[in-house]
Length: 382
Image (cartoon, rainbow, N blue to C red):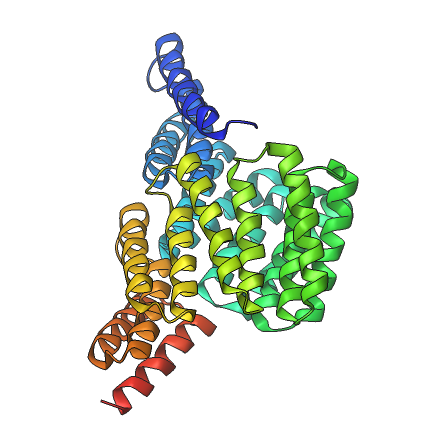
């Protein structure tokens, strides 16, 4: 996709036209309208427009329920989309509840061991992983892997997706060798299913590179990131958001190696792409500003770092709502930077805000624990 911004705008217009046409042809409460709403919901979700996605999925669920009853597989599809939207927005309790409802519907309508049931178990595992419930997440993912392998075969794309998620879960657990093995298996399947130049192949290479980076294997990590970048550029061109994602991976590697000026330049390139492609209020823009702030903090440029962190939180609040997991992470970075600058009182305030949000969301992982540890350290030094 050579001009992502143009495509994104055309896509939004096209989706709105599809819904309007369906209403005109079939009536506003017809299942064809629900399908158009569902398609629009997933498109909005993929582009980071969570509020628009929520509205589409809620409307689709209402129409399908009225038309088919609450246990129809179309209602399950709408619950699935809405659940993913809520989980992505940090509304885990609501989101996981909807994903479990979708799983129950698919088990009844498609079968206990169907691919659809396996995919929904995989989604629940991802949501639990995002909450930091890693052991429970891994259990769900192992169940999903067993079902998807049985239903689709060992080389099915659903199997690759579960393997990738298991790799990410092992990564979060610090079990890096197991993470690497899962990502390598996923890469093999992606190459078989999609060919060597597909974005899913690039994503698998990026995941492998991240594990190599965590293992301190910087040369191997850089090689995987470069291979991922080449595929992404061939697939999408220079200005696609996926290119920015790979640039961000390379920049994080540079930062870890102490190449701060180079890392900063790379992060700024990623930020420029994301702003142009997704708009100034997208979560990826907020992530990019946070990354730039981290580099500034490493350079001792505390005021510039704090400014970037503040802008990042403001975007997360607009895009995800207040008290998101992403904002909690930035508040922790704010606290550390204020501590480095000598503003202990400000650091305590930011650390408390980070811990409050993590606690409210029920998140218990390495990030929430790091925030709690920092708060105890700061309060002990007051």
